[in-house]
Length: 258
Image (tube, rainbow, N blue to C red; front, side):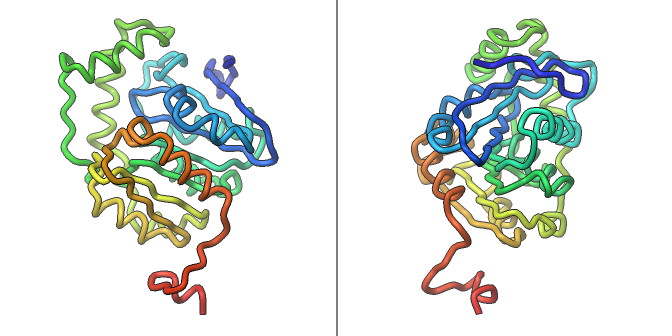
């Protein structure tokens, strides 16, 4: 069961599962909420670890504010959860917007980050394929319904949230590969093979990270945690449980093995 926790003066919905010496903080996508990642991989992770998830402001069961959405503010909110709820460092597993937030937290507070798994995440807004979400489309209706079932602000507030989210997607983030080179945490970059983030952009992220690994899940889209939950959970658990990769024929990692 979840509960509300005060994070920087705002009542924030937080849910925990499992137990263990390590904590995984799940970071949901934009126009989504924590239940999606908890339902798709929470049990697999909670089998051996403590799992914490929360709804960011204006998402799920956490009320919105009058402020626009900015990834830097979301990173501040996440740091607040790490300090107030987790009580220290955690592995960050984030889908879409959540993956972007994970990268920003790793840059700002590396002391609070173990390993990173950005799923379907872009480091610059130009890495996204063109986004068009018709408010009258079945997908928008499904997202709106889920929002209305959870949000303290009610379904009537959804158009406001949708507008703020679309403005965010079009203008942020603005990280560079040089920025990514400053992330020392071991990172698994995970994507669908037909993702909304361009594959060349995903590969650029992987190549820029000093301790990066890459997984592209076949037959999946930006909704890969929903479409291939068992595959994603297996990849994430294996990554969190393993050390630095040791391969027979390293190319990119050859310098680090000599």
